[in-house]
Image (cartoon, protein in one colour):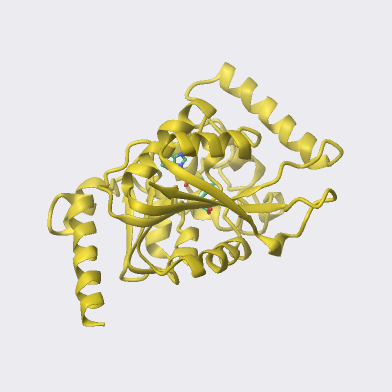
Amino acid sequence: MRTRGKRARRESSAIFTAVSRRANFEEWERSHVRDDRPVAIHPFPATAAGRYPPYAERVFSPRGPSLRELAVQALSSVERGYDLLAPKFDHTPFRTPDRVLDAVTGALRPLGPFDAGLDVCCGTGAGARALRPLCRTRVAGVDFSAGMLAVARRGDSSPLDAWVRADVRAMPFRPVFDLAVSFGAFGHFLPDERPGLFREVRRCLRPGGLFAFPIGAPPPVTSPWYWAFRGFDAGMRVRNALRRPPFVMYYRTFPLGPVCADLRRAGFTVTSRPLEEFGRRGDGSPSVRLVLARAH
Ligand SMILES: C[S@@+](CC[C@H](N)C(=O)[O-])C[C@H]1O[C@@H](n2cnc3c(N)ncnc32)[C@H](O)[C@@H]1O
C-alpha cells in the first residue's frame, strides 16, 4: 500500500515534469495555454439588427447554438470554430453522451486500474468522466481550442485533472500515460494524417499502455443516416475546395479495417470488443465497438 502510494506520487510528479520539463505544472500551463484570448458569453457576431438569435432558432436545444452560429463555425478553421462553439458545445449532440462514456469506463474497468490517463481532443472535458474512475494519479485532457479548454476548466474538474493546449499531432508529453482515450474527434483528421496521429499517441504511452476509443458501425445504405453522412461529407468537400482555412470534419473517413491497420503500423497490438449497451445491427454485428490498441 505504502509502495503503491509512493509510486503514485512518483508517477504524478513524472507527469508534471514530462509535460512541463519544469517542476511546476501551473507555471507551465500559464505559459502554454493561451487564455489571453477573450472567450465571451456571446462569442458569435450579432445579427444585422444587433440582436442575438432568439431561442426558437436554436438547433439542438434552447441553450444550443443557432443555425447561423453553426454556419459561422463551419466557415472558420477547426480551432477557431470550436473556440466559437465552446460555450454552447455541451448543449449539442457533438458532446459525447454520458451513456457512451460510462459504457467505455465499464469495458475498461477490468483492464485497469491505470495510473495516468490522457483524453486526446478532450474538448469541454467529457472524456474525463470516463477516465476519472479508472486512473489513480492524473487525468490530462489535450485540445487545441482555448475556448473548449476554458469550459473544461470551469466544469466539474478534480485536483487530478490537467488541461493542456496543444495540437494532438505534436503533443508536449513524454511517454508517461498508461491509458489514452478519444471521443468523437477522429472526423477532424484526414486519412493521411491518421498514421502520424496514432504514432504520436503511441509515443505518449508507456510500453504496454492502452489506447481505447469507441467506433460506430457505418449505417447501411438503406438507412437515412447513410445518405445524411454522405451528403454532409460531400458538402464539406465543396466548402473546403472553395474556402480557406479548411474546416476538416468528415463522417465517413474512419473505417474500422484501415484504422486497425494504421494502429498496427504505429506500434500497437489491436483487438476490439462490442459495447453491447448499444445493441446489434440487423446482420448481428455490434452497432458500436471499443477498439483496444496496446502499445508494444
Ligand atoms: C467534436 S469535439 C469532441 C470533444 C470531446 N472529445 C467530446 O467527446 O465531447 C472535437 C474536439 O477535437 C479538437 N481537435 C480537433 N482537431 C484537433 C487537433 N489537431 N489538435 C487538438 N485538438 C483538436 C477540437 O478542438 C474539439 O474540441
